[in-house]
Amino acid sequence: MKRILMVIGGAAHPFEKCAAIFKSAMEVGGVFSIEVTEDRGALVDLSTYDAVAIYTGGGEMSADQERGLIEFVRAGGGLVAIHGANAAMQKYPDYLEMVGTEFVGHGPIAEFGIETSDQASHILPRLSSGFTVTDEFYKLERRTEAELTEFQHATWQFDRQVMGYVRDFGEGRVFYTALGHDERTFRHPDFQDQVYKGLRYACGMKEGPPIRMGLLGYGPAFGMGGHHSQRIADTQGCELAAVCDRDPARLEAAKEEQGDHVATFADAQEMANSGLIDLGFVILPHAYHSWGIKTLLSGGVHVVTEKPFAVTVAECDEVIALAQEKGLMLSVYHQRHWDADVLTLLHVIESGMIGELYSMECNMVGYGRPGQAWRTHKPVSGGALYDMGAHQFEKVLQLLPKESAGGEKINRRAHLYGHFLKKRWHDVTNEDYIRAYVRFDGGVEAQVLVSSLCAASKPLWTVLGTRGSVVVENWGSGASITTVDDSGARYTSHLPAIEKPNGYYKNLADHLLAGVPLIITPQWAKGTVQCIEGCEIGARENRAVEVEFDF
Image (cartoon, rainbow, N blue to C red; front, side, top):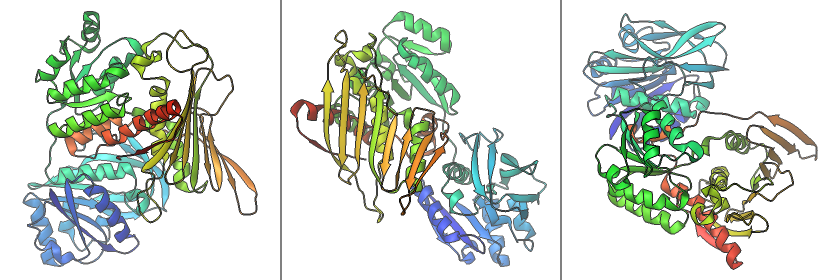
């Protein structure tokens, strides 16, 4: 674990609150230990630290303090300088030369866009290409002749300026970001991402070789082999190394589409044991997910499976135990965790606009005879709820409050029931209609309706709170919000869909290469299967099924 000293203090910024956010965000992965102080006397002797983070606004430094920090970095230490670390420090030109720039002014706090360049991607990998912040726009002047490798810019009144850079300083390394006025920026996930990677750089931490990935399954149905191949190609630190399929024609297609450098296998165990892959993707029909996971884990490689995790909770528990026994990563490709519908709903709920959440209803419905693909055959698919229903249940769990106002864990237990019908489409074995009902122990209810026998139009989401409601008609429609004030007056507004880049592969690579916490853990993904299986058992046995979640 790398020890980081964070020095804070000064005027005009909520230093203590921001430092608490910084400490929590940087320590969560177990890579860094952050010690926060306002005592600049700690700069005299930094021999027990790997890097220093400076988040200050002016103030005094003694000659010994300035010398201690500069010599520490020059000798191989790291410096992460945030926002006002270069402000009101004119008396310390040697310090400013090390930081590289000096703050010379800013406009009012405002919203503006950040652009990230690829110039430093070998140092700060997989930063988002752009994001929006509400912050002070710092104007900087160079205070060094040394090279600054710029990684982010922003435009203010038609003037594009640097907002972040890295540089070498002797044997050490310096990272600077002009962002960070208050808690809004410190809570921003893209800011946290760049500062986390800035800390890794400052500490001299480098990523290992790319993750060599193998696909177990390259069938033509739904195009998921090509989908994952493209995502791998688009993600820094990942490379496609192998494909396994028992159909020779599909192996030929993989070679043609992905290149002759990709090794091909007809046997999953052979690919797992080949030494050519570090991670395997299970891209098989649902009923075979558990088998594929076990096969790959037994070969000593990390595993990601397509959703659903498996078709029974017992299978989930079995492979979770195996992954833990072998010390390997296991995850589920719930890429719709980043869909616009759930991001938009999360924004409304977390804003408090509709009050306390108490009810969610998701409708995945239409009218028409399903096709004959394996996803409509229950012995292979698991049932109608295991397709898009699995994605939507994962979103229900996202929207669910996890902590009370006092910070206590809530909604970790639930009672499940369901109504599963087969009425018309007898040429397929999936259900025609499913209403799955969950009542969480914190008082929130959720319903997921999946049907190919519903001729009525229903919104994708209806979410109710104690002060209003939010309706999402379809995937990209945004949200219609109704709020009611204390007088009973109703107000209706529309929020455009909130869209962000899909973060699954970025998080996967960040986890394996940089120690960032995994978002879709196996315990999290198991919750979706617990909901689906419990609702089906409840419907079959006409009783409420109680479950306890592991996330």
